[in-house]
Structures are given as structure tokens and as C-alpha cells.
Image (tube, rainbow, N blue to C red; front, top):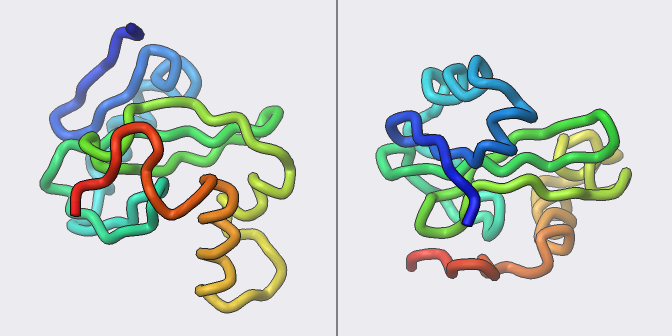
Length: 119
């Protein structure tokens, strides 16, 4: 099992911390809004619960996403160019629902495969 780094409510593996840096983790902690959208399943989540840091990586590009710790473990997810455009929100002009559908396809479905999102 990989060692994890915990900053109050934000969790990251040593690999994630090395990739994005401790300063970025501090920024996430400070900037965490009250509510956010769980990246693996798209459900609304609250920042009062422990969160995992997910890093979507394509070549030298990185996008940081959050998920409840009960939903997903902190990790680095390798994506292709199209996946990175979708994750970064840089797709061609689309309605929000179409963008969410593209993210669900990128994630591989609506449910959290690793742990299962709490209802």
C-alpha cells in the first residue's frame, strides 16, 4: 500500500504530493469551498468531510480534482489529450450537461469504481 499524506481534510499519496507539491496542497486546503462536485461520480459533496486529491495527467499537463475520501483514494490518473481537454473544461462550446456526460465517459461510468460513493 502507498503511503499517504494528510493535511487536515485533504489527502494525497506521496506520488501526488511529489507531482503537484506541498504548496498546491496547502492552496487546496485554503481554497476548498463548502461544496464541490465529486470528480469520479459527479455528485455534490461537502468539504467538511475528508477529501482525496486526484491528479489527471497528460504529458506535462496536470489537472487537480477532488473526491470524498470515502468515494476514491488519492491517485494520479493518466488520460489522453481529449480526456485532458474535458477535465480542464476546455472543450468546444457545450452545454454543461454535455460536458458532464463527457466526463462520465472519461471516468468510465457514473459510479465510483474503487470504493463506491456514499448515497
